[in-house]
Amino acid sequence: MSMMSRRTFGTMLGLAPWAICRPLTEVEVPPLRPTRGTRAMTLLFTNDFHSAFEPVPAFWLAGSPRLGGAAQLATLVERERAAAETTFLLDSGDMFTGTLSKLTDGEALLEMMRLMRYDAMGVGNHEFDYGWQTFDRGMTRVPFPILCCNIRYRGSGVRFTRPHTILERNGVRLGVIGVMGSRAARNTIMRSKVEALEFTDPVVECAASVHALRDQVDAIVVLGHQGLPGPMQSDAEADPAVQRTLDEDLAFCGVVPGIDVYIAAHSHRGLETPIRHPETGTLLTQTFGYGTRLGRVRLSVADGRVVASDATLLKVWSDDLLPHPAVATCVARYRTQVADQIGPPVGRAASRLTRKYHTESSLGSYVCDVLRAKGGAEIGLTNAGGLRADLPEGPLDRGHVLDALPFLNDAVTVAIPGGALRRVLEHGMGLEAGICQVSGLVAEYDPTRPPGARLGRVRVGNAPLDDAQTYRVTTNSFLVEGGDGYAGFLDGRVIARDGVLSDVILDHLRRTGTISPPAAGRLVPTPA
Image (tube, rainbow, N blue to C red; front, side, top):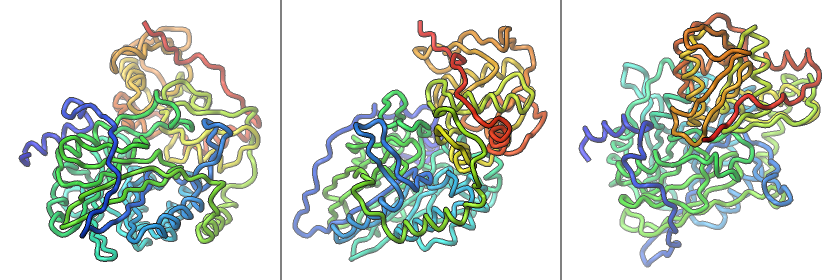
């Protein structure tokens, strides 16, 4: 493919990749069958860990067994290392978010990775949650390379991170490249957090790295962070309706030949069976995120090329794995370190407030009610992707709130024309980044219609939405900057800022004492 056509495709990625590649299909991959003269390597990998330090009850499975946990994951990694002669441990980005991450500026995550002896990490959008300067400082504390081939300092051409690296162990050489997709960079990073950086064409930059590495290594793996954002829903892996497509990743693998393994991230689309690109042969895989699985790819290489491969996801059964002592101690130390910042309970929930990605949720409605009251606005609105954990029944402390709302986003009130508000609601109904959560209005929508044509009748208070009227909407600063594709907010005028969103929720809990799930009926599906 010519350089011009690659540039054209790089621009198209994130817009309509499904028009360019074949439909996504999952196919069986032949098991590893080493032949004479070959050498084997094992790639262990994670993606979208998101500060999942503790095991979680998998309530969607029979008996609610526990999955994940940093110390349990570390033990499984060591077990797999002991079973193979040559292993590399990799991550495709989004280690950050969560209470321990926020209160330590990501330090707790990077220290965990150091103890687990990661060999390389790709950059995810959430690595910029605390600003590019904070992430830049964090990269200096780990001994392994952090990679992304298409981030540069704006206007200078100077790279922000290393584009790629060569890892060598027991005579086996592995080329590793990091890349971030255009849509992930554009829609899921708050613009003010990366104002000094620019994200260049991922196809062109990755192809250049493949060219630089191909003749020097036995295999090339790309740590890709692109596509649609993962569904923020506790039981997402058991809900087919919220599973994201991998069209953008598969299309990328089709126009950058020479990639042996593509470890995806961002969409949390776990692949129990990997995907083989039908034209380039690239093996594509990904876990569900949150450390509930350890990915494993076994490669057999000869004469600088992969001759056989297999891939699987290993469940991290928490109760069957003894916690790794060093990692468990590390997590406990950081929890002690931030205990004073978390403090005692500030309120309680009468029952659990839960998240849903494609429908109205009790947590989303509660947050929007608080936003609307804080801003004295007609409408409260937030994005489903900004709700990162449920609020459990019982006492609630600052840690619970930071788990649910971990981002440094302000509560912002804007004056916005009704027509722009309609575009905001329509975008949410498209489900590209989850449905928007609301307060102060009732919106009907037809989920069977194509995106962009789903929104039906909308009432604000007791009156129909008027495109010519200006409304006061309190939301978060990420959306005000057009985050998650909510471009309609760019037509709004900022009236007030009321502090960090998590602090606004904490203040409400202190004043209220006990909260209950709000009544449903704000987002009303009305399929034809």
